[in-house]
Image 1: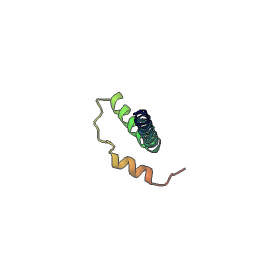
Image 2 (image 1 turned 90 degrees about the horizontal axis):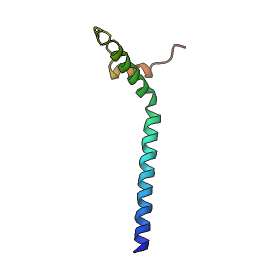
Image 3 (image 1 turned 45 degrees about the vertical axis):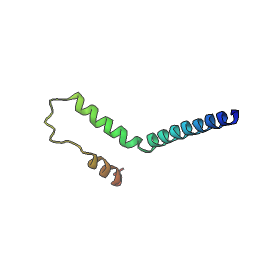
Image 4 (image 1 turned 60 degrees about the horizontal axis):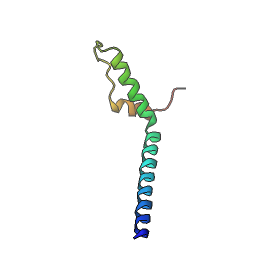
Length: 71
């Protein structure tokens, strides 16, 4: 019975570690996209009376990242 409890605890720790690793890898992998989305959202919130003619879509963000830099 003790061995089963140890195995269960070990399995639980492995699952929690895998979830934490997955979460961190997603955060690091999508960090540039998340930052751009937050920036565009914060600009929208600062000026709610804007006419939204220059609205940016997710496709624009992805295509902007895919294009070569002009630096």
